[in-house]
Length: 167
Image (cartoon, rainbow, N blue to C red):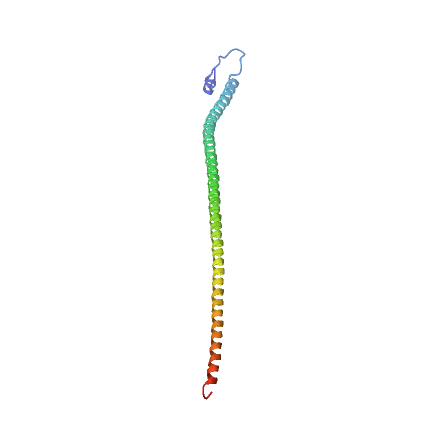
């Protein structure tokens, strides 16, 4: 059974011969009622504070769960982004290697073509040099033959001049 401050204040005792001093008893009862009332207010305040604290705790637990889920989601997104970046980097590297290999093959092909062209030009030059040498040699022989013919004509002309009067 709980006593309220009002019950303590309203409580009356019978007076008996040689009993307690009624004023002291009433004073004590008033003090006890005041203390009880203060305790009830404190209990009520603490109960309300406890409810607020429990509500706040529940709210914080809910926020904590939300934050944990958000962190997990963020971590998953970060992991996916890292994986995508890694895959993209691998793809870029593979494409660059493929392009580099293609450029090397094209360069080698072009080098081979240029070397073949140089070899062909050298063959042509040798052929032209040989042809030019042949032409020069033929012209030299023609010139020599022409000189010989001219010298022969000059000798014949000299002979004719000897036989011509006035000469």
